[in-house]
Length: 70
Image (cartoon, rainbow, N blue to C red; front, side, top):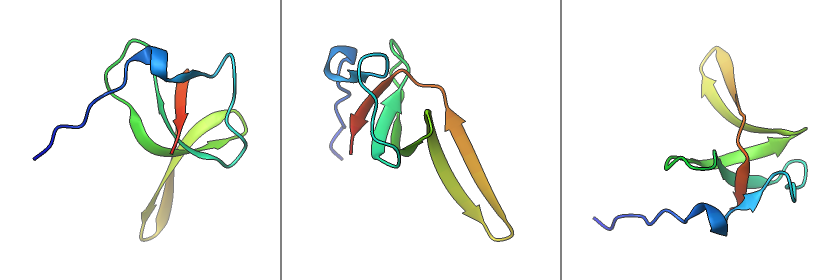
């Protein structure tokens, strides 16, 4: 199994310098943290993920300051 390389923070876009387009699919993370969300949607200033559970829809909003387009 090949280990995925995590890009250093300097390779990510800062949300304070440029923002994704509304509805754009991207990856996001908190500066200085190793973990990241691999696929989310930028929606009205928030990074969001959606999960369908038969009778409910779970929406998670992330407060991240770094992003990359997918």
